Image (cartoon, rainbow, N blue to C red):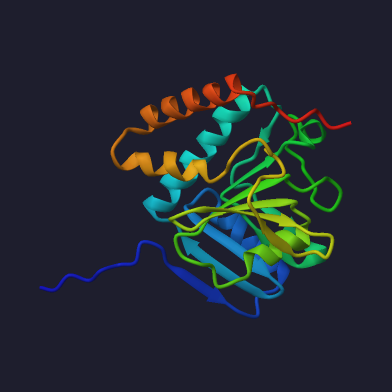
Amino acid sequence: MSTVQVPAEQRFVLSCIDWPSYVAFADLLGERHVRVTYRRGVMELMTLSPEHERTKHLLAALVGVVTEEMDIDIAGYGSMTCRREDLEQGFEPDECYWIANEARVRGRDDIDFEVDPPPDLAIEVEVNRSALDRLALYARMGVPEVWRWDGQAVRVHLLTPNGDYHESPRSLALPFLPVMELVRFVAMVGTMSQTKVLRAFRAWVQQQMAQGWKAPPPPP
């Protein structure tokens, strides 16, 4: 008997899929652990690995700690489906947040991406690279900032007036936070429980605040 090694994440790409078929198929999947990405007739299905889910959960928890400690209003919508029929595209970020525009979506379950502002920040965990250009999807949606985790580092991408992204050393949504510091805390999970990692991160944030970290002023 031989053992077959199954990839941690698998991707399937289907072509010539019209918009109604994409919507019906994605809705049929519901809460199953399959990510569906669609752009102009091409649909990608991706299964999610334990590494992918563990990392996205930890990054979301770290964002939660820093915004809580600094009393920054934030609306986290996780992996909600972001669809725009006029752009013929739909996708699910790993995590997404309204920060500058938090008040505009506070408590709402009826966000319309053709009318309402896009998330201020999205997080992408890329254990394996998508067959579709996901940054292009975010750019067309007008998402100002995307963090991409490639298993080794977090890279910050900011949307330019030209409609593409450039890599930045600092976050726009959380400008006081050295985003690369997150790598150090994510790596700690190899030797510490998530609870202890979050406790260590909270202590570090409190220390930075004592040394002069300041939250950005609220939007006008």
